[in-house]
Image (cartoon, rainbow, N blue to C red; front, top):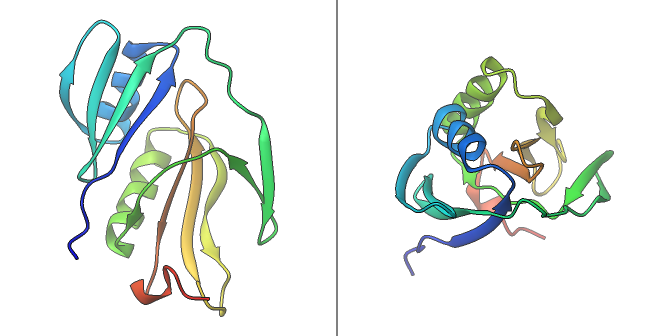
Length: 139
């Protein structure tokens, strides 16, 4: 079965800041928009930033391989080359990493490159890559 793009809508407190971050920093092309939302192409997936000036984000974190992983979060599993390019792009833009780019579960089933950072509205994003994509759902 071919993988189809996912769709995710999420709150932002400032559409201009979302446009600068997702379009400028992340390099996502912009689709349709209105005064209340903006569509972005996130590595072939449709994400939609919806204006909600009163949005309050959860402050939950779970321990994963020695790091406090923010919940909720979203992102994309990239190729290792695309993951490395994104890590460099985000770092060059001066974005602060919540969890710096590193290899998680090193030497174990599911070994993966991962990084976490937040958009200007505080939404947590994780991008990861596997040297072996068969490890994505390995147990």
